[in-house]
Image 1 (tube, helix red, strand yellow):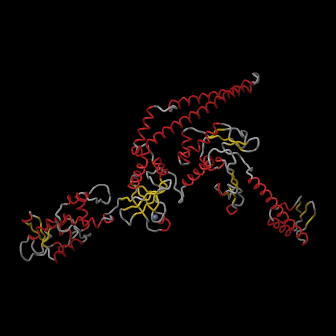
Image 2 (cartoon, helix red, strand yellow):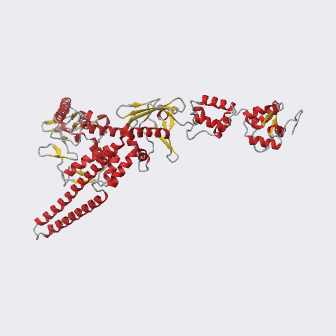
Image 3 (cartoon, protein in one colour):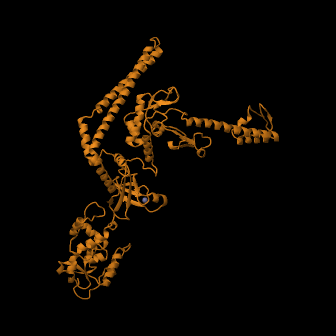
Length: 622
Ligand SMILES: [Zn+2]
């Protein structure tokens, strides 16, 4: 027999309750409570037990529903409060008020200011740690409940502060809703989803005293969302030298271009890889990054230059404001230390001198407080030495000088890649690039912050001459110049004057570049000089360099063949002793065979049939 006060309370759901009835029926067990005795094998008893289970489940549901409704109503009035977050305390009226401690308020304000300055959570954390700033925590439980403690800042705390709308004075409820689909059985804390303030069930603005305006809060949320490392967000500024990472979009598919570095991070490329990564498609767009970064930097300088005087004044003001803020913060710290020491002294004096047990401990605490005060005073003295509140004339001059030389400041080694990215992000919202086919012409669209747009066309470096959009014009111009009897050097000079540019854009044309280009294209053709002297050659005679070109063979190899006697040749006296090779169709075919012949182990020599020249029928032979 199973005995209980209210048996149906054994189960929270009908499923469990019927399981129990089933088992009891199989093993012939009775059930009993204050109202009576039941036999689960009996039809009437079973019916009654089933009904009571059902009633109980319904009752539970109604109870829960009422409780939840009550909470919701309270939340809708903005009165359902839990623990006050950092910077707030619960007043005697049960509501939240700003923390009365001035230093606490200062630190909370500083967190938001520094985040706006640094632009990232990690930047904020680094700043706080570097300046030895601790965050004020009033524990919710334990012996020190409600007492102010100063803790080392950590990422999670700061993130919670930055995301919490209470600092803009808003009340929210339903921030962490439970999604039953994501819950795991037996783990009550699972299944929580995070809702932005706008999607919370209750959001009441201007409910609490605020640390910052709602607009500032929203811009901080936007900034945090942009910093996320997901495809839809810009991502935070990073260490890489790329200026436009996160801002650059592909003009073809609209996706983000990813920066890639090779060598010692000196060679930068922007590539649209998403389609390749996702579906194995060919790379959508890929272009060299340095020229684009330089171009955008030049545009920014042009925009900033007129404002350099204002910048210098603003920088001076900002520095002075920061210094005086630090000064205030130090005064607060010193005051706190002084108060601690005085309080410890008072406590020590209040105890009867005979009560040694307590007196000894209080004396130790007093000494500790005095030591702490001295430590703070020394740190303050150090601070004053390093950063006097008033700017020295030397510092003021440095600011004026630097702000006048913006490009110098931009390129200075002290300016980090993140600083530059920050500046770009202040002025530009997005940059779209589109390359015309495979050519050197790049259409850049700069979306300026505040809505303006400019669409300059930029020339990018490319790998090959053939990619240049001016290539056909370029070739015909070279042809023309050669027919005028110009040397390669002269051709190069002409091209430089006429605004043609080499594919890599690194320097100007020179004679060697033109020669290499033409020989690679097989366009070396008969030179003007050769054409003049062509009448000195006999039938089936060709200049050695022309034969080399026809066979696509280095000239030096052909000279070697000539030295070995593998071709018939003669020195032409009329052309200052240049070599002319004699080769009729059959001979030229043999030379072609010789060119294509691949020597292989175990026979390392060329076959004799291929290396023996045909006897020349008539005329001068070698
Ligand atoms: Zn693309």
